[in-house]
Length: 469
Image 1 (cartoon, helix red, strand yellow):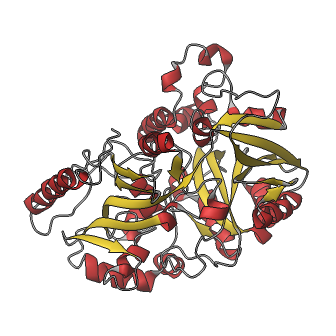
Image 2: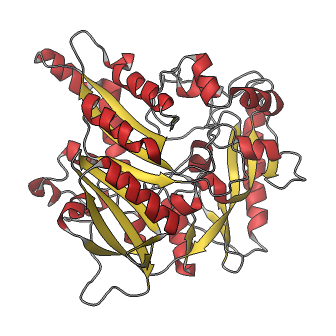
Image 3: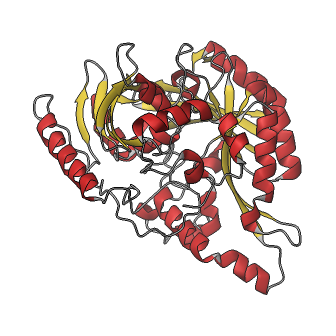
């Protein structure tokens, strides 16, 4: 749903949605846990079946209002970025950071973090939020902001990386930035990770490459001696002799990185360039084989379709059941995004190639947008450029090891911590309690929990992201 209203009329309908949700909350017996009744998710954590009633938030999907003068949008929390982009692009505007998968929701990206190729200049999604309405664990609906006079500014700053353990975002007012119709891409190859990291630091610092402005930067590591930075510049028209490429059908975007040094996409297709093949993970379903792709409906070449297939596989552990019957090694899912300082990137990738061996790998630079801000549940050094490293596959395990033990994932956690990095919590985590809270703002988190969910109607952050739900 993508509904846009005038400034005068959107509030009445939104207040009705609020009242309906508040009534749902009150109908849940006191002391019973609160959760969302969601059909889909972009999380990769195992969850036990739950029978408790959930809050139906399906109606909270839509763009309430776009203000092209102020360059802001009022957006319902369950709105997917696909719907959000469809609403803002006609105004020549887009969110400051658009996570790369269509069905990630705005509320999910703010409470669970997100990143994209504009993050070296715009930070992560929560950094462009002006204010939010949050349904807290205590059942209150609070409007929160980062203004110094806001009595609930602690919740505003503590909400990112809380993963719905403090409350749920119902409405968010976000900043937008101007776009241009096309993006020119340059794929630059590097023989070593250190050379790539050095170039990334220079390009993001100057925001230029070969004398041209740079709006977007990310990278793809195919092997230890083959890695690329892709720098993008928004333009009004494609360069002479070039037309926009289409990677929504038979073409596969990530393969084009190895084959082309320059490319052009429409701004719409650029924002979703990774979604068609879920980066490169569609290959697990045969969707990159021409004989299969030719008959795969184009509308089904989407990350949410692949996610449903993965959820079915994980529910029944089909691959490992077959592997055991055939006497082959079982495999552990290693689906993670981590951030390490750019100065430690080569060190991390050296470890990763040596001990994990997943390829390709995605890299994306990130710098905190406002150096003065403090986000206590996921703190960065505001003076440091970090690099997100994303890897999503399975790895074979030695005899006797079991997938649920997290052998490889725990090793990655240890290395990331040693390199002064952080790990995103959308997937499996294996930290002990003390280690976890030392990394993810334990003291401040527990203070916020006591204020905004004193009866603990919502699972706490450790329970949600480490222990099974």
